[in-house]
Length: 611
Image 1 (cartoon, rainbow, N blue to C red):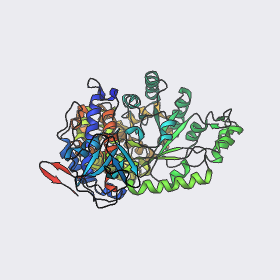
Image 2: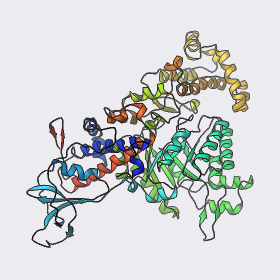
Image 3: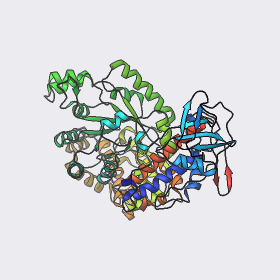
Image 4: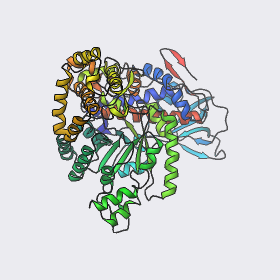
């Protein structure tokens, strides 16, 4: 159960308490859909996700806004034909029977569930004495199942929470262009979770302004900033690292990396030293976000010797520090990113996570790190079922992304939040990425209500077909000038040039000698500004909005339909987080009952739904 501060009706946590009930109900319903006695299987969790959502939505429609607990009934079925695990002796209180017994027990996360056989039914015992082994006295009842208390604070890896000073193993990922806002970072931190500021795509001045605010408001409380791989602008990546080191930003979310870079390694090993007790201490931590094994291997390995030597030669570290750096991984914590919004390989978490865990175990055994390597799960995390599945597979923590973009604290416009709230799981599409346009790298975006994906693909096709802007066919040129840039291509280059005079003047020098690069910069200017138009809510550019989004957004919308969290105005990152975590606890407890042979069912719209 949440503590009192989280359930205050006069604070944002009042909505969080309502969200707790939302999660509990959906997962309670989920428990009724699987076969009796089946063992918990990750594949079953994912394959049954759509059915879980449908049932959960129906149950959630009766949730009150004041946060009071209210779940659909779970029917206590017949006693399973399995030997009892022990015996329960009452202490003046008889077991609870009836449809509400298991419902109440499942929702009471802070107390264990003791299921006993009573009057030829499954009942829930309270108090008394439970023993394993032979029957202790004549009044004892067969104990059929035992499920311990499971609260959100218990989910995930305790070492991860301790390392980052967290109450919950839950993080809000960095969404570029400040969509992962200072407000999100602060709200997550105050709720006992971890939030990352979306630095990618922003100027150094805007990033430093965010550092000023977050450090002032949070002090020593946990927070992080994004560090994105910038192959087209290596100087910018290095400047961001300089800023983080100068301002004492101690935790970064490293995203979109295809390989390790010198600035990234410099950030990680800067200030490394040995403590008085002989432990190697690294002040700066990197949580890598990866979806490929070859990249994960590099992050879970020590920094390359060549890079450490280069840092010694440049004076960034000493030779002794280089020796210490060779004993630590670039990242102790790694977020395995499945089918997410933005940069993604669209891989299913159910196959990606186990393979990454096998790699983790291999490299932990090889390097024998003092602090064991940890893996978190991201991509598709949007319902209690998906959160429970991730933790059931052994994730140290979960990270959400798309669903936070639809919350009130996100650094985007109300128009975008409304668009996201209407999206379904299939309303996403891949489109060329602005930061890696020439490489053909794509990002996952919302296709519902915007033409961005179509127009971005057209730009990439023209880039491949033409060597310079002058080669663009007249018909296509007219469309670009009328609908895309709303000016001549010559004027578009003038505007682009002015941008790079401040951002990275070397790009202008290269463009003057390479007309294809010049064309790429102009095309990238459209891709980059499309996100800005969305964040500002420019109504004249709605057809051009680039909104990073994964299928998780649609799953979240289906799950919350008919509940307080359906309305964008009610979606806060803390309410969403606690709804998911509490719901995951109920899901895991229900699964534990099923694994011990307890049959669960629900009553919904006067129709009994069972296995």
